Length: 225
Length: 267
Image (tube, each protein chain N blue to C red):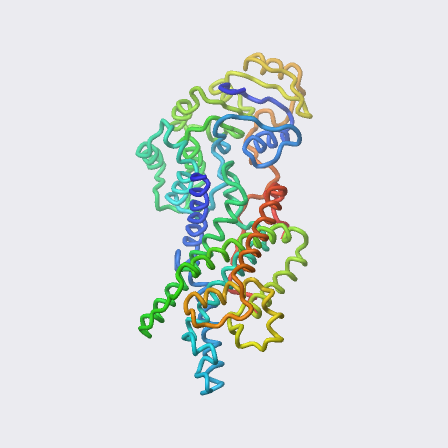
């Protein structure tokens, strides 16, 4: 799978979540193990890891500290990144919770584009394929050069623009078809049962894990006697 | 290794930053909360001394022969509360969970970062208070700086080990968690020597408190400030053993049960 840009096609929504969750390290695979030589990024556009109380600059400092080596390899320079953000009037001092929905989507997608990973995971593409994300798409294309992509999105225009291979999985995760993207789509159209989720891939990405920060004010001054 | 250290520091800043934007006092919040408790304790101890009036051992009791009362309480507090803060937080589960979204971050990194923040806050408060007292009384004394640093670091390791064990204990049942939390609070307050010195206790009472390794840390820390301070039944070896056993056991526990910490605590 390394070096390929694969669209995973399946009717099982849970399987999609679990696949991306297991690759991202959020859940352990039910069986087997994931072997990949390189850095696996967080799901592209995912906003799960940053607390809404953080400022933009805090969030960026945090991710640079954690993924600094991926920034060194990146095609996107910091000045360009800030320039991209300023187009949506996003500045370093803003707090994430104060951003509009559109600004949030843009900021989290821009963060994913900023770093260069060896494996990109793309579970959702509604915003990525929208008009607002158009300035970011060329940079994602650049970052994806010679890199691996796994997408569970059912968005056909995304698949045709970003993916080269297709992998059709059955309801229980069994491999039904593997090959070029066009053949895989054709095979899936003919053999998979029609699903309600086929073209609407904008469900909130979830792995069943609660990764929200909890308020820890109760740990401090109270109850010490 | 270098990256993992950078990650721990990054999570530590992440937690301070997210608290600072939600608080009117900004990043000072992490210091103000423990400072309030510490000042309350100092006020309580000084108040009792005033109530007791003049005795042959002066206002602070017999401990006043060796220490200023504020230094005495502050030195006990900075060790015992470091242990308490790390342990109680761990018992409440992994509350900072969002960073786990990033594949490079593991639950242990978050526990280490939380302990680092507590360590920073208490070390800052303690150094500030000791510095102020030394400044006002013009009597600087730190007889064994090496021992002071060693005891502080050993306490951090012991707190970390104990905290990791409690993270897993806290997942069992919320009632067990509450009971353990209350017991821990009382044990730490009343047997860690924040308010008393071991040499003040009658010999037959000492075994009731000297089982507590935090007491050994507190008393050794005071001894490192003033080598004249008597520390009967207090042992550095006991403290080191307790730290190593707790840390070793906790790391084995963590290694075999890491995936449990990825699941949310139901409480």
